[in-house]
Length: 319
Image (cartoon, rainbow, N blue to C red):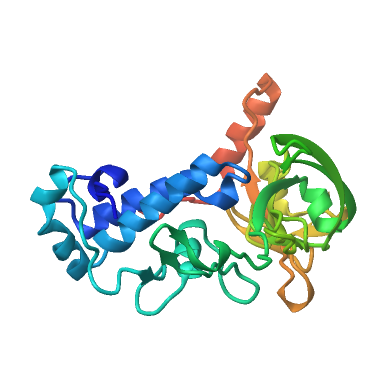
């Protein structure tokens, strides 16, 4: 076998650690793997070379045997490969190339890719790589909803852009429209699964799934705390002191609420079952009292407030 500088092929120094060698190999494999360069003979040849180098340098014993003939190789002389070099398989511990591929590109499990036909001198045995159909990976996209849309749920149409391979093999962007059923009461951060709408599979394998992650848009009236809806309700001082019956907006229409006399700012009143979620886990709407004092007073109003101050025994502070 003609001498090849395995370190140079992987772009690492002769003192490189095993981790550095592995990292360099994975980087090159992503670039030259035949499945990512269909019909590119140069890339395939390069991939064979870097794989040959990695199979020796990743193994401590094989690397040591390789290094001890360094002086002869630097003069371009031939060398005798170490015993067992005639047929080496990808992956350590009896594994095959699927272990390597899944480590770099993800995936695995039932339906995952598997590459067989071990490396031999002068090429790949068994006619090279034979890839089984492999399921595509799942993908995720954010999906914005108004609070009203999340509360009501229902059918929605969404338009997405995805990258596909054209007839000439060149990646291009395309637009697709999908029908989505939004569950009533869905919360911020929850996901909707669209089966078989994710990334395409390999070698005819099925597509992965698409997950739409819900992002609730800000609302001019309500704040959201998990499944609970919070409404700040401004009250005049006399409404807080005397009590009142007011119509309170909710996501399911207005309701009448009795404000008890003597309520203070920051206190919360609950409207049960008017939040997000479903069934027993459905949230509530909370009405948070915010007492507002008038910032402009007429002369008559000021006199009345001063009269109230003089006659009232109420003390808001106890310190």
